Length: 326
Ligand code: F6P
Image 1: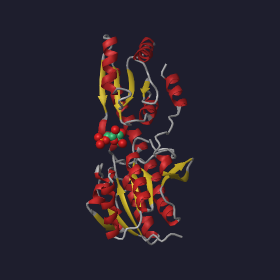
Image 2: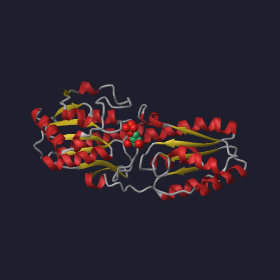
Image 3: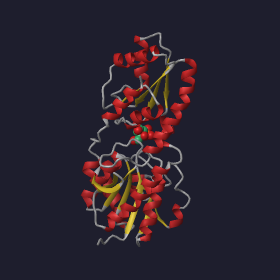
Image 4: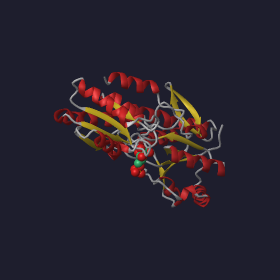
């Protein structure tokens, strides 16, 4: 049994729909188990500058359906330094906060890993990012909502693409990972997905599109993951335009609207389950783990594995997309 009496919760890095559901779950499950719970505002930045408030169950009512994060979020350079982390630890001690729940993506959990090791502080992470690029969990909180947003946007763009018989390159988020682009393409019936994990030549792409037009398709849609590796939608569209000037090409960058909106049922449910599991993990004396869900079961994933950047893209899905785009 653990000696922990209090939990501090923070959200960090890019916000993701479902973060509020996770905050609510950790707060309520924590209070249910007898912990004091503290909300830490603005991620690691607010931990250093002492923006902390004790939470009751009321602080988290009426938030499960809201996008963004009531705790606000930030990317904090200072926390990347040993001095910054020492300062954060001193603040925690001042408040008698003896454990942390960090909700965020790769960068946030990397920070959590350093912090936990340096100060022997019990920290549990929750995977909160639309990118789905944390290993050890089938999906991350926010990914499903973002995917649905992408699908709805592409459905709308398809109306105009078809009317004008145009080729559209639509850029989606995902930084170094192609999950949103690939599964967004399957869900919206796009012709192709250009993702950082797989290199695609302009010729290959043009051939595919040409075949599509020949077979009487009157528009084409290609999803492109934002990444220096893919060159982004602008870069790719320019290259195709240069080589095939007869194509009527347009670009649409979906941008930050992918991060907003009310979370889907799936994201609310996984956030609630993971939040409650984070409290169980602390009660169980777990350290340095991210809570994941694999095959519908809660799993504890060591931070070192979750942030390794080796979550594989499912290549069968690329093949499915290729076969269905004829
Ligand atoms: O990590 C989530 C993410 O949405 C990435 O897909 C994207 O590259 C990045 O955040 C954008 O971050 P910012 O809002 O800081 O520009």
